[in-house]
Image 1: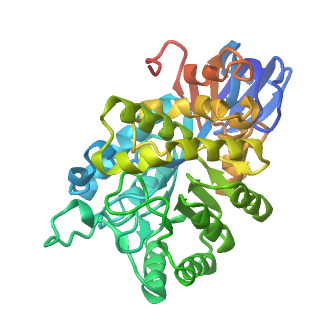
Image 2: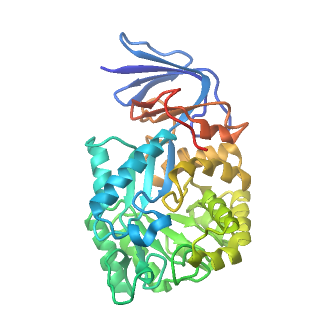
Image 3: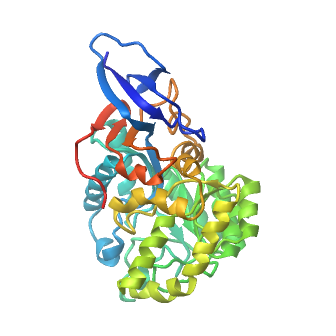
Length: 410
């Protein structure tokens, strides 16, 4: 029986607001077997000295796109399903280096289900990488955020989007997502910044359409994640029973209060805003995004501060794929800059994210939990930038990275 003992200088357990002191963890069979000031040292156990580091549960990013590349979106969507899955595998492995042991992928632009196949290969151990939870596609109305037809000539009818209009079509598309193995249903009820021909300030589903989508998903036992922007769209998502609101770009205090009362989670993707601002200033933001982001960027920042000042459940998500995965770790710093405490930002990427995903044995350090463990020099509660210096990663009890391996993000 393989066993590993980790000697930790300080511990963030995933739930607390303070760090624990020197702690030892015994890992066996992919799980934490013991945790305390000292633990059993089985014969032959590997001893790993992390006494100069803060140890945390593995990070969870609840909003990525492993098969999308925003910088070449129209061209990239035309690639084969196999190409997208293999590219996604490479990105997932890269992201594991930064400490992300669980990812939720929220939609590919492909006629098939490449992320479902990738999830299954990872779960079966056919390939190595982080745990993956998936929504196969972004279900959208015609001309909504998930409809990419505006990128192509009108004579082309390319089946890369999950487009539906009206209650019957929507129910059919949700059922197809379920039939082919999606863990979540992803939809867009407002426009987006990088998509052509739609506007984040506009609601794109009628109430009966949004109600039908959520009701069908719930009947099938699937939670719903909603790309949303306009304040009215955020409130519509909450009313209809969405479990997570993605971005919530233009949410107002009423919408945040409604989400808080409903127990919905907000995934504000704050680093994405910083990436877009940098591109706007540099003159490299895609043409279709410029007018929308120039109009809205201050309101987006204001909405982020409203979320941070509230008691709403905030889960960590980045939208990586729309920008470089190497910058995803900077989400912690963006969240703290918006007003979240470092402890709340860490919980967002550990216990709160795990709770949102309804996976009860990740996101925490305790006996019985999966041994998804990261370590970093420094104290992230004093300096949240310590999260960008992760140099030890264990996933399901297997050491993926040790101090001295690899490089750190710029």
